[in-house]
Length: 144
Image 1 (cartoon, one colour):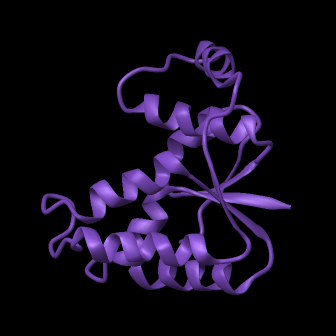
Image 2: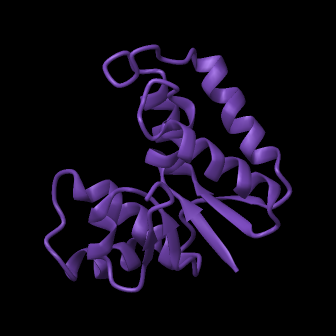
């Protein structure tokens, strides 16, 4: 069994100033201590680096080096797999995007949903309710 973690959960776990921090951090720590395969998409990891270092998003943004060390720590876990687009991704994305009106802020979510579908990952931990729009995804909120 495997699952994915969305960028919002990684950000909450890193931002001590947000209300979701404690629960997100405990969730990430439990995942790190577990044996289930955790899939982190490259767009998720790059989004984490972009947002965790952005002063308009974090009151006290991380330095790029600190954020990169967080990514290093995740990727060093034996049960973590970094996933990206493989051959045939674009037709899969096009089919998924044809299922609903994908535009604007839904584009990166559709990107990730198609990536997960390509890798056979059905579960994503996120607070982003937009993922409920994608057929076949089991969307779970680890903060609730």
